[in-house]
Amino acid sequence: MNISPPPQDYEAAAAQDDRIDLRVWLRLLSCSNMIEAEIRRRLRREFGVTLPWFDALAQLDRETDGLTMSALSRRLMVTNGNATSLIDRLEREGHVERRTEPTDQRVQRVRLTRKGRNAFGRMHPAHRRWISELLADTKQADLTRLHSLLAMLKSSVAGALDETSIKLESRPT
Image (cartoon, rainbow, N blue to C red; front, side, top):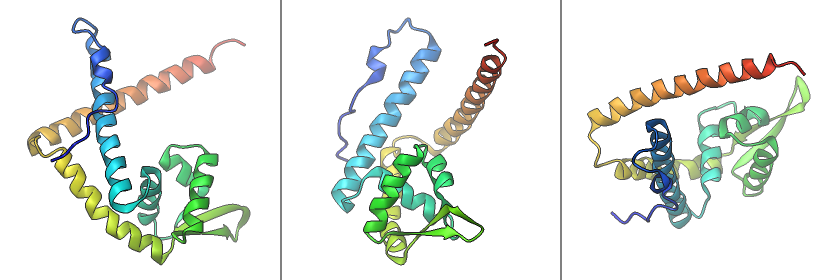
């Protein structure tokens, strides 16, 4: 397997005596960056598309009725402006279509076209295979355990964020 070197190894910045929470965060960041960089490279090489392009098609493929622009930007975790420019490009290429909602003319719903579904249908199996290749040296039982641990971590972070926002809202102005 020909895997590119990590774009930046954030973990190298952590000293062995740094707190474990910092080291865990840096390790997660390093792993995520390594996988993302390789997936970006393969999407460009094999299909001539960007990761955001693939992600948008993936989100729209899951919703036969399409998504509103706001819902799509939330799922992609980007601003409405970024989602709009991405959808503009996908629409120009014939992969998506936009329609105004009949009940609210301000709302646009985005759907995959047949061309978009076909393109995603070619990319999706390759993407799944690439992820499997990148994680192949990790036992399934370990992946299952890691998934469970990451769910707990995600819940912990969400709880901390909720507490932070409550504290910020209750500050006197």
